[in-house]
Image (cartoon, rainbow, N blue to C red; front, side):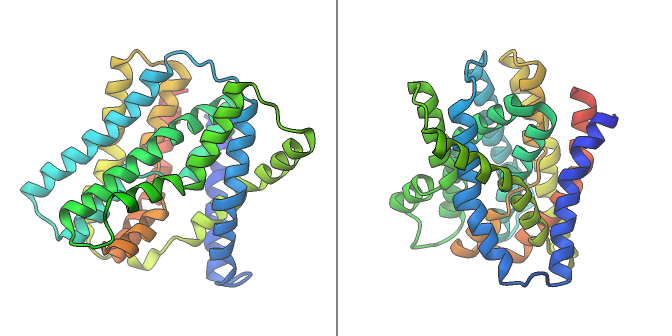
Length: 304
């Protein structure tokens, strides 16, 4: 238990520090959106390229590992669609509920996987990112296309959302370098290493800055349904699929950890761009970030 707390507390402490900085307006409101861009486009890709290009990628049953995550994401969405048939929500609200249930916070995931399981855990987390991010983008944009009338939604928009995602590009580059046995020049490798050391702290601080506590009271039923999908339905499904594909040990633990993560702050951006309920999305992000502390603690205590 002490090991779990020593890994969990620093991660969520940085999130709280980020929220504290927001409250005291330090350094300024304008600083954090730019810092988030730096993390998303430079620091985090540097971390993924550095770790994947130098890692051992010979994990057994990686196909079942990835497929467990993909199937759990898909069927979580299907269950939410069924729930929405029974208890309908406004289309804009439902799109935010789905995003809340199936998206995940990349920064928290990588920070926890690395803190608890070291480089091997970080690499396994990156493998999930490579496949889960494009799949989730496809599902979320499909939901917007089905439930909202929006001229922006077409195949080009979908393709662009995938190929321009710096995290996907970084995973592909790092994995390809590793697979082909290409070693980066020492100077470049050391530069990426230094940049990667700043990625997770900056990412977690940005997560804290993004919390909007005052929005929690709005749309309680939608927040509850989305959070049940995220923190109950999703992890149960991913555990079931993991066992079906005979995943165990660290890989199963990382799968379940992946499922109970809070939803991604980028969900708010997509909701704003495509006409989703942005206030509800803010509530879901904040509530799930708080709930996930208990859920992650439970998962780590049970699976480690």
